Image 1: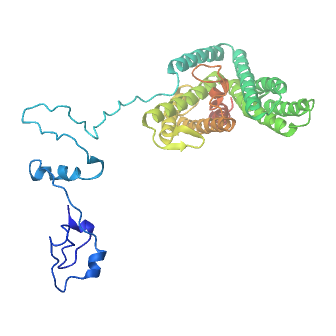
Image 2: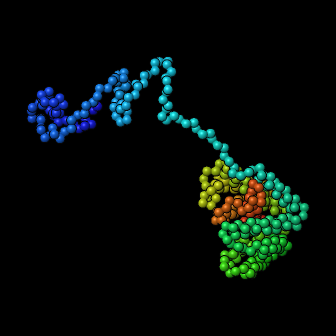
Image 3: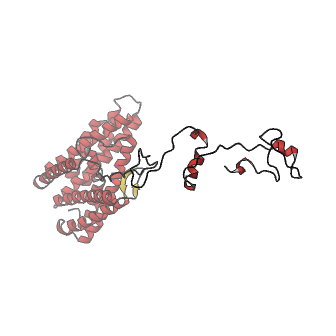
Length: 374
């Protein structure tokens, strides 16, 4: 044991004798001071420690002198060369096997999503190219179901009771009016539907009237009015091909964003609104949509040019992304993941209309500018 742990001794002082009177003498000299002798602690008696094989075991012997190790333990012999040790001590920090890498999940039932998507696509294409009136009916049904989902979630999560009856009747009438009378008919039908919402809500108690009619007017604009532009696309002479271009570009934009974002996405686009969307996914949406737009404008639209399709695809990618973010903002405010459960693998009707609704007026306007309203 090092003596320094007990303080540095004074020069010429060897400590008081432990042997009693007459068995040890205190050396005389100027270095000795009686007062210092009283204030200095004597060195403790260190017991003899059996050696354990030389300097290499010095640490082991020193460790046995302190703390709870002062107990009778048999000295563990070192194994001879080639001998298997008895009861080997485990490693204090044995390395743990690395966890197996997990495969990246797509986050939804792709089988169900693809099956439902193909089924809906078949119904839409069949009604679109055979009887236009049937396709108008498909739009009206989608609008009514979407309004039902939206008003139901508003009531469940926020206690907002937007009147569904005038919304559903007026929404279906708006789609028909847009197909029959164009933009003028759509505006008139929208105004009448908003007025019907105000009057219908008057039959209930006045508490919550303002928030209910505000939500109702918002629903009128958000679902049936924007959907009316799809019917207006159909009204043109090459209407089925315009509607098909609109559907193809929107679906390709969503697919490109989903595929590229899932595979390469690292930088969040709007984490507070939709944490799953990435900037890489947005670039995928733009690239896929522009390529599809060039092909559609060149081969599907009368008098269309490929460069017009590039601009159209860019605009569709932007509007579809904004529509998706807008729907995500609504669902985040309501505290829900999907607007409904009607479509397996997709959610509800509104979860599929989120990017289609704001894209419809963009495609209608650009096609009217490029090749006319037809």
